[in-house]
Image (tube, rainbow, N blue to C red; front, side, top):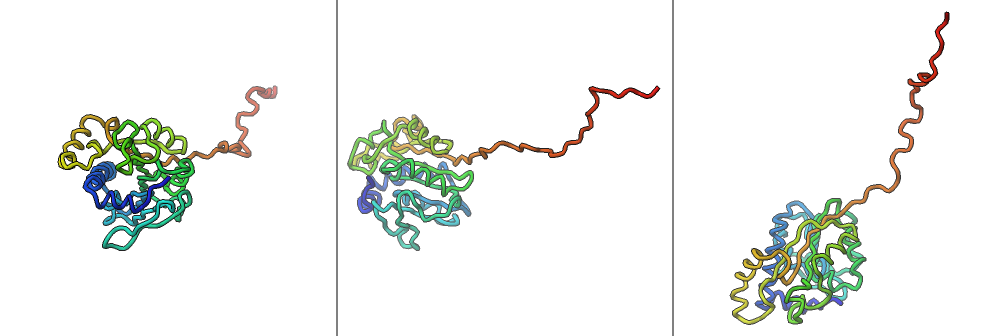
Length: 248
């Protein structure tokens, strides 16, 4: 079940913990994707907090928000790029997306398989996707004080297995949100320290969220190869096995 867009907006833009979470996850996204010049970048779920770095140089940025969640205008002070859509039927052409980000989309979906099929459809050949999900082993998935405490948490193995089943190739993985999911001032003030320390210690075990990068796998044709490479081959070797007798 998707969360309400008002609750997501209030958490990420009106609480100190939400702003810290937004920065921690976005820093990791930018680490994996430092630029998207001339590319089409799409976010699904509530991924818009992660898309701002790409507004300037990308060809197009689109924030897709599922109907059960609701939509809000984004970005503030600029022309709106957010769109309300059906969860598994996006208003995008097939194969036109270069980079796709999912946050608060997969773990709350009632049809994760169909959702990933739609992700595969809109990505172009070699297109890349980042999936941000609650870490099953992390503290954030165990607290309902943040949006990451709702939905279906994943381990890295579970997430990568599901991506492979839907014709994606997992490439890289990172983690974020090593600070506790607490609104207390001490944890907020020391958040940057915990993020830096956590990244040095572990890439996926201790963080509150997992970030997996996957590439779209384009299937090879299933039909056989050329059945008749040469329809009328030259029979230059015919007769070698049966040499003709020379006249006496």
